[in-house]
Length: 78
Image 1 (spheres, rainbow, N blue to C red):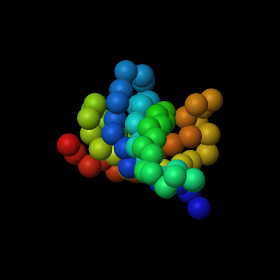
Image 2 (cartoon, rainbow, N blue to C red):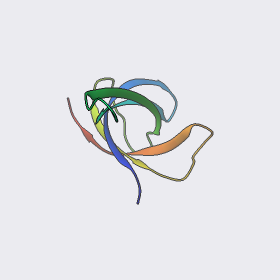
Image 3 (cartoon, helix red, strand yellow):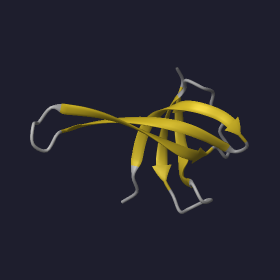
C-alpha cells in the first residue's frame, strides 16, 4: 500500500523538485494529548508546476534520487 499525504508547498527553488510540509496529529501514547508533527518531503514535480502555498496531494513512489521518494498526484489550488 502506497502512502499518500496532503501538504502545503513550502519551496519550489529546485529544478523538478518541490518541498512539501505535511502536518500530522496523533495522540501521545501515555498522556493522550494530541501532538502536532510537521515533516518536510522532497517531491518530484514532473508535469506539474506548483507554487508556494498550494495544497497538494503526494504519493510514495520508488526512489527517484537520494532524498526524493514522493510525486505530486494532484494540486488543490489555494
